[in-house]
Image (cartoon, rainbow, N blue to C red; front, side, top):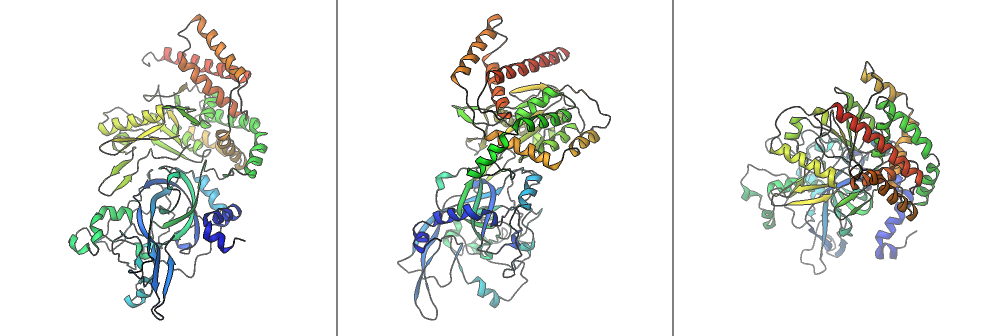
Amino acid sequence: MPSSDDWINKPLGVVEAMFGKKTHAVPSLNDVPLHYLKPNSLVKFRCLVQDMFDPEFYMGVYETVDPSTKANVLRCGKYKDVTECGVDLNSRNTVTAERQTFYCVPIPGESPWAKEISFLSAARVVPSTSYVPSRQKRSYEEDDDDMDTQPQKQREPHTETHGNGDSKRQETEAPSSQTTAPSDTSSHLDLNFPLPGERGPACLVKVYEGLDSFKLNDTLEIYGILSVNPVLTVIVYPHRDPSLLLLDPTESMETPEEQRAHDPPASLVPRLHMLYARPLQHNNPLLPSDPTEDQSAFVSSFLVEMASVRAELLAYLTHVLLGDGLAAEYLLLHLISNVYTRRDVLPLGKFTLNLSGCPLNSYTERLYQIIQQLVPCSYRLSMSLHTMNSMRLVPKKDYVANRLVSGALQLARNTSLFLDETQLEQGQLDSSGVRNITALGNLISWQKVDYDFSYHQMEFPCNINVLVTSEGRSLLPSDCQVPLQPQVTPPNMEEYLTTIHMAQFTSQINKFRVYLSLARTLDYSISDEVTKAVEDDFVDMRKDDPQSVTAEDLHRMLVVARLLSLSLGQTTLSRDGWMRAKHIDMLRRSRTEQQKSLNGNEP
């Protein structure tokens, strides 16, 4: 049991030790509606850091005056949004501290099965009876008992609190129209999710320590103190005289747009005061997420099954790809690919696959749905002319609201991005469409997204698996093109694919999910002996025809050899593994050349 000295001298150490024991008992904002949770309770949140706001000042230590005894009481302002009533503003013991706010959203594109498993394993929460967020209107005298508090954030304007019904809304989904005041003064609240149609709560996370250890787009599991104090609600009246809003001289520093972005209603965007944050290497709920002894034991036990699970998954993907075993092999390798390091600007390990020759109509959409059932994070971008010309892919800085407006390419690491080029019809790409195509090309080639800061662009590295399905060769770059050669032609494609998927038991699908996530986490190395053998082999291949095998071909074969080894649970490259990689690459190139001869118009 921690002593009082432990809590005073090393509170974060005490908290971290407690998390290692009973993290499963902490309710999650991802799984539990906000109105079920008690204010000032400990909660966790699985999220992506979508934006980082400017630092803010708060009263770290302050004194209050007891109205009855007139005695001064020293209080701590950490992990709170509002101070106690009766603050002695003239106290010499007041200490101003600094903290930073992160705007965090649920992990974009998280698959329904991952959410469902997380929900089923989440701590069960009984709705709080001591906190009723959907209060009816009360008299001002009654409200004074609750509202006699002072905003702790010193740059925050004076706020009003209205007993509206917003907090009745379940925060597990983003409402289509959020209102924080009557209709004549309301404005649409944009939760700034990167992907359209996303659901879940957004959260303002207050960070007190270790600021340098966090970056934009980090995926975290945050443990902290939940704050939904209604005094945090900022109502902005855009049509009123601006002079009426200036109740505090510092208020003029924020525009109404910035107030709406940085101080949304706490009933829709709760505050979370961070105690501890754990970086997520993956968000697969079927795998242990901590590098503990339990995880090591889990990995060791599953490695024994890797080869058999791989064979079963390969057979499943072969059926899905209409009997094409070679395409299934490459799709499996693509699904376990991962940028494991960067050499200068070159991302090593990426393996963008272009699956060409795909049947039209609904095949690609159904293929995505099957992949979505296997990976924890994914998104399908239908590359229709309208989508490419109208959709915002690249995040952009909004200087009026002082926030980063999200784009569809602001994704978590290891997200599977499915680009459906079969939807692209004839027409003209406008300037926005050209920028979007350029952004996709940069993502594929360099695993980076250039965020738009109006006056300049800023590179943000990423680690996204890109699969491009197309009718002919894709107009986008790729690391590997595999023309699909169907061996079966089902009369009803939808029924065929549904039957294949339904034939798999849930336990078997779960094994596939574990396999794909686990293979990405394995270490890999090449011995000096095998390296020398590969170099000699490359020289021999170029002897007869130097143009037949290039350095780019060697790099691709080495990537394929690495993925083949990892797919079998092998962490080093063997001679047999290298020969297997050469063999399937030869089959793929032979098929590609054959396809080019059939379609003379393709490059």
